[in-house]
Length: 172
Image 1 (cartoon, rainbow, N blue to C red):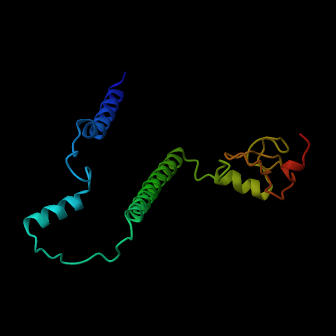
Image 2 (tube, rainbow, N blue to C red):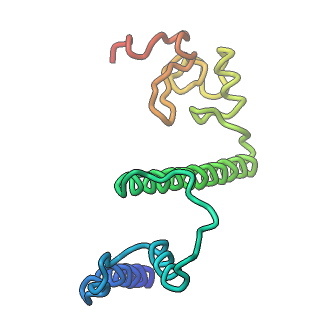
Image 3 (cartoon, rainbow, N blue to C red):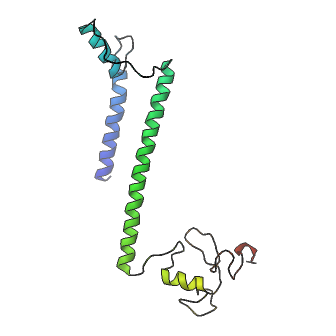
């Protein structure tokens, strides 16, 4: 077992213990509401210390029930998680794009299109010429043969309305 696996297992065990031990040990049994939030605990402590305390402000919106309050809290948490996921996904995508651009610059191939062709091959393909291979061979980019890009769309080499016609219309 690797060191990381042991650490992850230990962390998982600690999290489970933190969740289960208060229930098993009966912590909070002497209270009316055993596991209230910090806001309720603070309010209770303040009213015990200073019974004539008056809050500085009141909430803008008071939900009619605890269920609605919980639902709004869950919605807020979900929106926050969505914003964080979007941000980290955007950062990862930009980093991967920069790494691909750096790799392309180092190889000298230049930018590529969706099918993985370099700019020169793509220009020759669109012009109907050949950039590599013998003219008329299935491997030649300008031959009109269908090529399969990374997504497997099967778009003909000359484009959707190119010389090869639609790939679906051809006999296999």
